[in-house]
Image (cartoon, rainbow, N blue to C red):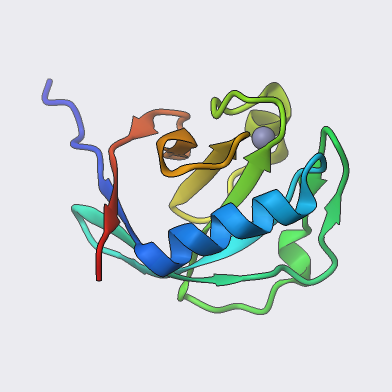
Length: 132
Ligand SMILES: [Zn+2]
């Protein structure tokens, strides 16, 4: 059986910078952001960030209620920080439920190279930072 091809994630330079600076500002707590952009068959394109309403965060948990979000189909996923230094999804991340098409995790020290992207099955996706 043919394996389903995974999407590639393309994030704008300014959105990547936004995730990096937001994560640094909240460190040592986790930060969480909503990703805005569009999803095609082959790509997840991240163009902007939204700070979620009613976000809660702490050293080991960050989250928001999907129910508090207005319906908006430009919201394509979420990004959150891992102050602990691994960008793999934690058990809580997997159990919490998945929002949108992609989950971005950035690990301390919050650099381009510590950004990871995952689909709803927990598969790691290729991520590219666009220079425009
Ligand atoms: Zn996490």
